[in-house]
Image (cartoon, rainbow, N blue to C red; front, side):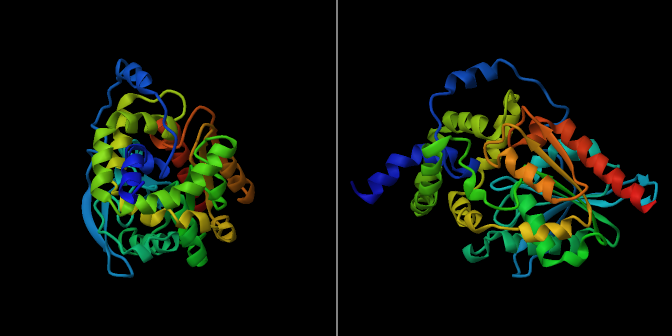
Length: 354
């Protein structure tokens, strides 16, 4: 079989599922998709529709990072409240924080930004698609948009890894400038142990094959994007299965799938190999100088709950918020609980400064 034929053979499956974490086994779940369509709760605002003041932040390699700022009118017990800086995960964009943004708007100054090559940020060179570079990017965002006051960082998945990279690079910031850190569905390392929720040998095979398959697919981006369109129902079903836990409203699944589908296959391929080498356990003492919270879902198929439990164990004084029925997209699926945990952590930082 020719390389082109091989690519075509796999493009329907891989193109549909790659954004969730590069690859997975989907199966026949379209009946579930039809069931979900019959139950459609509404949201007050269209998901992803919120916009703030828009800025470009220049990274240390000159790349433009897209950021939005929500100003605050409220004050805390110790004066101006800390600025909240949100870092999103792999193959998503800043809109994934929709519910937290809506709930906290006007009460806290908030900074949202798109990671390099994601969302509205400029496309990065492949050699700069690393977690360490993302940590430096976060530092530039803080310098440019967080102001002189205290900062609380909130990061989901790769965004949490970004925070740990920053802690490794600038430990002196933590406890002084950065007074709090909320780590959502993330890990300090050993990500290769994650197998997309697939047990035993099948899960290990998925992990071994994914980088090679991604490299092949990245050489045929038009074919992949075409496969994604043809396989849209399968893609949505895969998103439902891998990104959420028990029941998630269809609009949450659709919204997540739209973010994943908007991430080009070669961007996914650029970042994916770095997860194998990712290890930030030595950065945790810096984080421990701040108020910390770890939030996780018991049904997370991307960063299993064991990663969050270990993080909490290694961060003295950390509050662990474990939601048994939630999956990886916990800030959508259980948005009220996630927002409450952020508020509780900010209150802790304000009490300590009062």
